[in-house]
Length: 371
Ligand SMILES: *Cc1c(COP(=O)(O)O)cnc(C)c1O
Image (tube, rainbow, N blue to C red; front, top):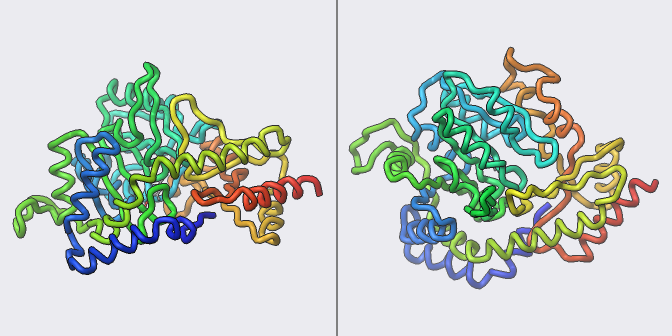
């Protein structure tokens, strides 16, 4: 699905040097590379504070802890997402309130968010899914109206630009109260292990979340809050510093692959290509199509015989996962998500895709339907 080796080959000398420098300095934890990466990312995103942490799931958890939410407080999020989003809500004994997504962009449906609000609602967690931004104009206006915090789950859309209705643009993850991202190797800005970060423009919240990520201390051995231990290590920061200046170019490479898939599949009766929202550029973390009147399993099996991988993101809606079953929901509760989970398929997309490789994938997808 991705070509991390091919990407590494192109930046090998820079990465190797950065890694060796850290090893020689022996400043593995909280070294200068972490602070430099933090500053680089703040500048790139145009956000006041970046708080590096251990992974994207921790980023979401620390964000929710930073908001001082109480057990039972309700958090509204999308039913169609990676489990981490709901996992941390449940882990903190907050109440996940799931809502359906829009059938075209697969992102949270703002009108469903509005309907799900109760006096206990404290926050909304929009997920910028597959590389495309949620309708943040709507989400921010709902948040303002009901005085809710917004935590953007930006694990899949780092680098994407959100385009407001008035034409202003802002980086995904910097619009809400807090933004969270992941540097898992296959994400658009991936390190060579685990990593994550939190973004905010709020000074007080930044100080609090920085403290929570560091065992609840701002002065060593004086613990003001129950915190966690969540750090980005210096080796990962050094690698990310090499990759960050290439992030826009990587997004461009992904868009080129998406354009070629679109051109090949757009008029196909059995394939609906991704819809691109006018509110957002798309950084194509995934290239995900919806199949119509076709057997997804059979297509996947056929592609596997040609050694072409294809993945299902995500096969089961959150509300039907064993761990997240709840009397409030049943089969049929979220028809759009249920339809997507049954019919989406994602094809390989990455920054090093060669045209011949992609043509081979395209030919075989089309060949399957001609059988
Ligand atoms: C990857 C991902 C996360 C979690 O990131 P990790 O670094 O793997 O913990 C959270 N939310 C979404 C939408 C993701 O895709």
